[in-house]
Image (cartoon, rainbow over all chains, first blue to last red; front, side, top):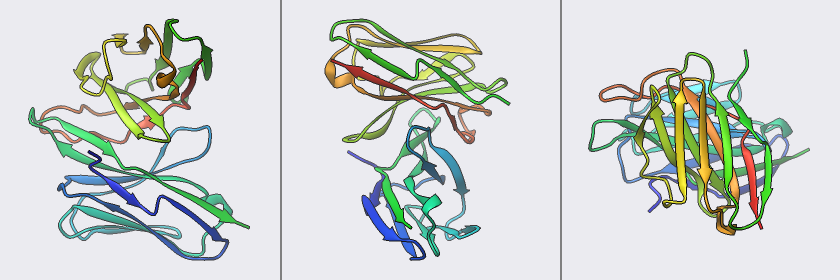
Length: 114
Length: 119
């Protein structure tokens, strides 16, 4: 069972368009992170959101954590070819032993065409 | 500063052979994670260590997989015997803060990965 579902799975858009990627779960997370992974490399952290309803901006990227801390969205304005990559959300949960664990979402593969 | 270092970057082997993947975490980080990434299953956590001690290995698929961290600067993931379904990209990541009870795991820094192909 996948705890974190991302949609869409694939997205191909023209340069300059806007897009939104979603990350949804039935679990409540203590915090949620977004990573971007480029081909042949490991994921790189973009942002961490902690508070329900929190909004963070990173240049043309806007991240929002749902009020109930079960979902998140990533909005990109005026997409550039450099935004191409695999976007992964990662939620932090406390397990039965009290340890914080990170679970990664299914991923959204974005292609921005020049 | 050097990031997480993994070796080899690519490994091609035949079914039944032993495979050893290596990882050097970022100096000073005390948590280390091994992940496997495939198209079908995405990024899966296999095992993580805190201060060289394995904390959670529930993601290790079966007894053919084993991981060790003999010191703070080195870890290995071994598959013996390897099977074609083990083909994937294996990532090592390290984190600067303890992932312990009551503490929130910090940012994970990923290595470039090892692409394993088992024929």
